Length: 373
Image 1 (tube, helix red, strand yellow):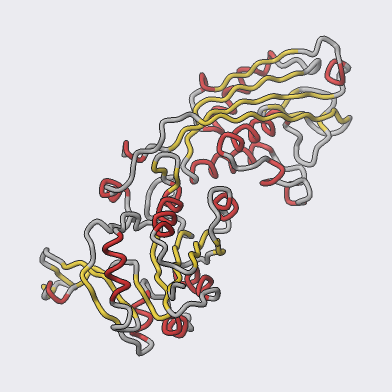
Image 2 (tube, rainbow, N blue to C red; image 1 turned 90 degrees about the vertical axis):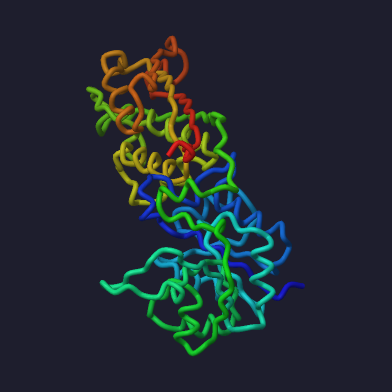
């Protein structure tokens, strides 16, 4: 049985990354970065438990990929770490960042081999450039570039973090609390992804898969004598609207399902349940915008979409061009990548009896290709 637990921190918002996609959702082949890193650690069979901290926006999506223990992260790195430490039962804990993805087995074993030397084992890199601090040149041999992962005695780290003061790494907190740390030489390849240019240093990662991911969506709404009618985000001149919890835009609802289906992220009812009063009467364009943003942060790019509207009434043709432009703008793609087809039901069924509208949608996604940055 191992005496060490691994905590992987993946709850960050990537605010310094300057891209729509979060770092943890960059793909290597089909695998998101957080899963690639976690699986590599797991394959080494060195840990009693592996905990992954995640933002509340990502945690349900992460659970769809792999069977790890996921923990709600906090607003800061330290808050996420404190949440995870509540579950640690082993004598030692190794803390690493998902953004530090190319950690070798030899490097990891070397860190663990020093575990009895201090309360915290800290890898570092030497500095070769001249260092100037506040207009004063200082001795570069006294400067260290601190890395993760860091190995700590669990009790020492838990005690050190019983404070509101924020620390940028575990060793700083432990030393501030009177503990000890041992520095060991780190590894150049264990580069942390912080800025866009750091992507060029990811030697261990493959390019994202070039595959196209397809999803379908279907929705239907009955007519209502009250309210306004919206289709594809466009107001339709009509004496009736749709029966729905939101504004009833059946076309956008089908499209959202198609987009979520292509990403394997469930359906519209899971993300925007009709039991949630905050969505009562909501503009469906807002739901689509939120869905598009979620896809982008999770590393997807939208290719094209195709919708088929089945309606005996109202007439769709006069609105098709505006519908295409509206959806293209909401999706962030070219107008010619949005196709809208309209047909009647030949007076058959509830559609033919002018009781409602049905929409089928198809959407195609690809992965954001960070290799092209």
